[in-house]
Each structure stands twice: as structure tokens, then as C-alpha cells.
Image 1 (cartoon, rainbow, N blue to C red):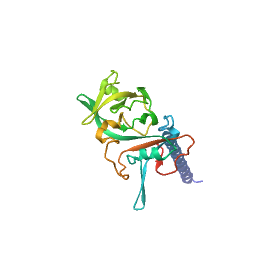
Image 2 (image 1 turned 120 degrees about the horizontal axis):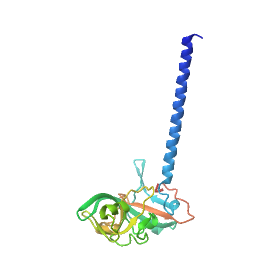
Image 3 (image 1 turned 60 degrees about the horizontal axis):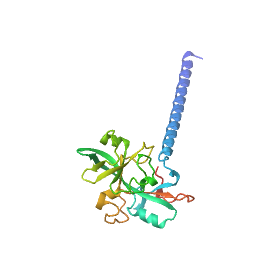
Image 4 (image 1 turned 90 degrees about the horizontal axis):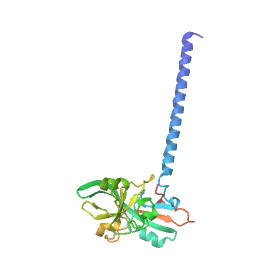
Length: 237
């Protein structure tokens, strides 16, 4: 075989080997990325006691033949579900908000959830201090993360201390959250919805059922019931 032909074959084989190696590496990388994504997805919200029976209710609309699904729903959806669906063991609501939260003259922008009194009994985020059964029972209650408590009060005991939503209600700290495992919700504090006074769900003017702004409704199904097959029901994850 002429020398130039030998080198041509060698180069072609080297290129083929390189392409095969690159393809194999990309395949392995794609497999690992998909595996990591799946592992992350299935680990979110699995710390709740009844995670396999928790669902978030949403809303579905048909607009011009196009289906639109949202994770929020009408404010009164929780009341209707509680009254009309016997398979629902518990129902609770929360509404995410971004507020300036602080003490005295020091305020910090924070993610806050306005919630029903039983919120921590349905989505049972653990507490380092306080009782989940009563932490949101009083109308001015708020539970905070340890990080926010330290930011506001240093090493002092935060229980019983007050913090304020700028241009809003004064809240009393009734609990401190333990470190939170992977969750679909991001927040530094959870406050009783009743603290909003006339703007709270129980006192605000009734909204039409097609008003789905903000409020997220969660249900815990009784044991033995299959999960909903409706597109209105989607797991918290």
C-alpha cells in the first residue's frame, strides 16, 4: 500500500474513532442529566407526612379552542371542595406575596405566604419552635425561617416578638421553621390570612369564579381514594 494511502486510512479511522467517542460522551452526559433531573423532580415535596395524598387544585380554561391550565384558582374553591367532595380529608389555601417585612426602621424584601390557619397541618413544614396545630390560629400570627429570625432579632428568642409588613399589619411571631427540604414553595415567612383584615379571604368582597388570581388551594385525600384524573388536579411537585 502506498504510504499516502496508508496515512489517509489512518486519518479516516482516527476521525471515525473520535466521532464515536464524542457521540458516546454526549449520550452518557444526556443520560446523567436526565437522571439528575428526574431525581430532583421526585425529591421535591416528599418531606410532607402525607405527600402521596396531597394535591394542588388549579383551573382550566378553554379560550378560542386553546386549553390553558393555571395552578391558582378561585378564592372560594376551598369552601366548595370541603362541602361537596367527601373524599377530601383536608383543604387549605395560601397566597404568595412579596412584602417589605421588618422591625422598627429596618425592613427587608421577603417572600411571604398568606395562609389558612390549618396550612401547617396540611403541608406540614416542620417547626423548630412553636406548635403546627396552633401556630397560625391567632389572627396576627406569623411563622418565620430561622434565617429571617436571625436577620431581625439576632440570637434573641423570636417567639412573641412583633414584625410589621410595611404599610400593612403588625404580626406576632408564633413559630420558627426548621430547615426546609426541597419544596415548590419559596418563602421566608407564613402569616395568617386573617391579619390582612378587610382584604382577607373571609372579609373581602366576593370574587367571580373566573377570577383565579393568586390563591393556591391544596387538598389531602382520605386514604383509599384514587388520585383525581381531572386536569384540574396536579401534584404539588
